[in-house]
Length: 121
Image (tube, rainbow, N blue to C red; front, side, top):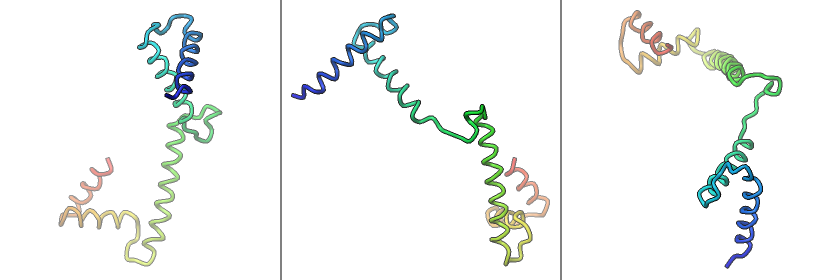
């Protein structure tokens, strides 16, 4: 039998008794299990906390995501320009029109514009 694990469980029970002096958890096996679960969740939540630039200065996660989306859009535009530089396409939108025609078949110019508009909504 592994007595080391038994000793660790007894140590946890002693810690539970000290930290539960205000009787937040019932002094039962279920209370002990709840205490362990809450304790583990708190430890895990702190270690998986994401970091973003400016967080310590109060920058919101929405602001960080917006900045990343702007950078992603700039990268996509730059990349698409270099990707279509030696082709008949003039803009990124020309390529998007072609993709939609390939996916949805023949359509009028107005139908194509409406389809693109509905996809980007």
